[in-house]
Image (tube, rainbow, N blue to C red; front, side, top):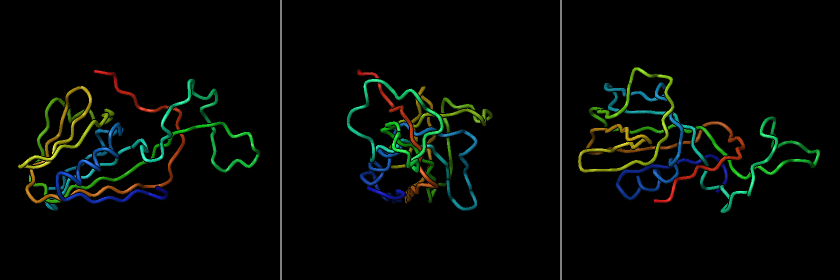
Length: 162
């Protein structure tokens, strides 16, 4: 898949797809906003591009992590097998927002998004550490769109085996 991702979800099955692409996204607390007059909840996330990730990570990360460029024609590019990109996520049809385990005053806090989960009364965003945001909505629509250019990273998110 090439180019910026653009997805729309209107039901639980669609949302599972978006949830997979957003897994391990970094979401700054200050980049989330409920717009009650528009019945909309929006956020900007730094997402790992699972769709372009190679199956196996290299045994050791590259030595040079800064100043990596896709445009270097010198032929000595280092292998950086993964990418991240910013994306906007919008939920329409939201009537209220409830949180658990998150301090909304910590606007600089970075949250790790684990999953999106649909239920009969809305959508819940689950974050590492047990925090969550529940969006009250019945007829919701979720849209995801990549913003800007991706950048290379040598770090692939990992989850401990259970």
